[in-house]
Length: 122
Image (cartoon, rainbow, N blue to C red; front, side, top):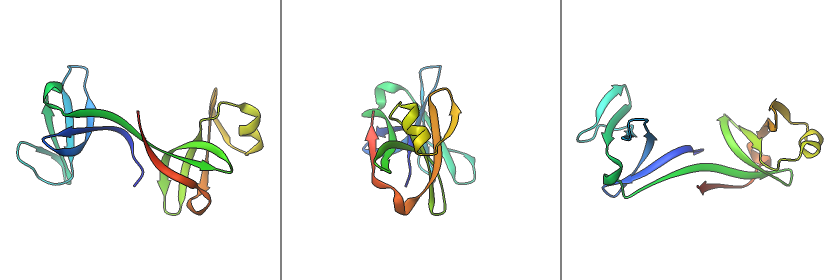
């Protein structure tokens, strides 16, 4: 599974999370759970104060492709959308990456070519 976003530990379980401007944390689950409100089919939310969390971290999926470091920003079937994190334009150009914005380079890479697929907690 490719993850890119906040995760929180609350009451011994891990949840997808979203900090909100009001200071509260929104927790999400795919299954009905006590205190969670269904916001759409298969998506349930509970709002909790940060003090109730055991942990709040950002997780992203990283990898190596063609010898360079990338983060995975999407997936479709047997392809991964990868974003170059090396910061060197000439390398990005050599790899044939698409320039998305100033300093942002991405491409679709066959999953079979991606190495060292792992999660990083920030």
